[in-house]
Amino acid sequence: MNNQKKSPKVSLHISPQMWSQFRQSMQQYQRKNEEVIGFLFCKRHQVSKHKIRYYPKAWVVPSGDCYERQSVSGLVLKQPFHWYLLKTYLSEGLDVVHIHTHAGQGIPDFSGVDDRYESEYAKFISSSFYQKPRLISGVFDESLQQYQFRIWDRKGLSFQSIKCYQSWFEVPESQDLLIKRKQGTLNREQGFWDGVLDPQMETDNADLMFARQKVFGETCQKQLSELTVTLIGCGGIGSIFAELLGRLGVKKWVLIDPDRLEAVNLNRTPGATQKMVDQQWYKVDYVKHLIKRIYSTGSCVKAIPTSVANESVKQEIAASDLIVVATDNHLSRQIAQELALEYMRPLVCLGTHIDVKSDNIPRMYCRVTVPPLGGGWCLMCGNIINLQRAALESAPTEINTLAAGAGYLEGINDPAVFWLNSICASTGVGVIHGMVSGFLNLDSGLDWIYDFPSSSWHKTNTEYLETPDCYFCSSAPHLESTEDEDEDKIIIF
Ligand SMILES: [Zn+2]
Ligand SMILES: [Zn+2]
Image 1 (cartoon, protein in one colour):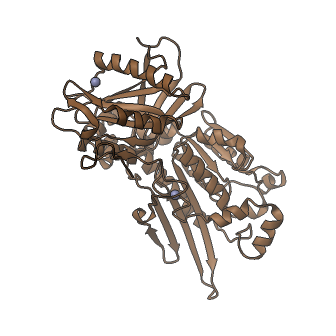
Image 2: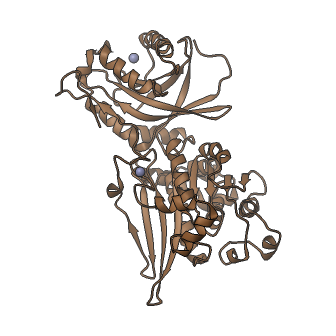
Image 3: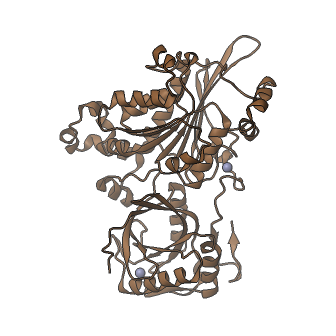
């Protein structure tokens, strides 16, 4: 029954936050010796010719009263409820992931009953909706730790097994780490120390360049080398950031910035020269030069000297594993955030600001913001960027000049120093290092502000940033029917 054709690699990518909510809900409705069903409704993203990823926009776990039968032998959902679900989400163009559990522990297998039922189901949904949705199915063991996923063709004739990632990135974790994490025997901190205790580590890593980073584990180093990072803004913060993250081990880059190097940049751009300025280098080419200086071979850098507002770069950004925005304007941050939400990509936002008040004592700030993957809060509802400013920045130049004159916009005359930008860029790189190796839990996002000369970090309580009705980041509602309600009644959160 397996597909013999060479087909693109398909993956399912769920944000850590949604994954834990979904699993909790499955557990809540699971009774002893009984199976439970859950749905994810996913968007499809064709990353490249060879790669397709699905990411959920909504999830549903029906409660006990939604079933005709719930027993060890199988589950049948009440038809009106089931049909309501499908109609609501599949007509929006989403594909469905049907998940159920099997009794017992360990990696579960799909049963013959599953094969027959899912084959019919795949055929049914693709023929019932104009958008011809696909069926992805998943089976979990009863502890909801081990699982398998597969995607069906539209005729219900064949399937292919697919990978599921419940992390910030879709880079493969080592099997060992994965199993420990699934078994729950590994917390994030232990994962970090695991590499130290592993005797294999000492002999495996022949790469001297990263010998002093072995402490973070081989997996982490491998993930860094496979990560594709889009950097929007290759100026005073972006260039330092690229130098640092490049040295940490990131080799694949997409660089976006329409500007050229200017003499006023030279106080804070490492390795930049007057000659580059004279030759009118694009900033993206200058940062590419920095990366190529680290890796004479084995790196892959796309330098795109254009604005992030340009439609042509959107697919490039969406296809990367991480978006970093280090520009001094609000519009590019807004666009980056919108893309990050649309394609469920991790976003890291870096910025600095220097204020000189009337007492002549400068106050200096840097800010590192990582909104949660897939929504919850974002740069817009968290007031991390100003939408009015973003709108002004998209206006024609004459209006901008007027606005700048009236003090609405920051311009190139803004004070900026290397050391402050370095604190910001370094911290951003540290946060990404923590995301990749797991020593930092970012599931609900992060917003840190550094304040100098008082020299203190303020950490925003991200609970206050959560905005359920944000125009930009509130995801499609997840839906649960509750047992106390009438059977037709459905509660939408
Ligand atoms: Zn089954
Ligand atoms: Zn928001």
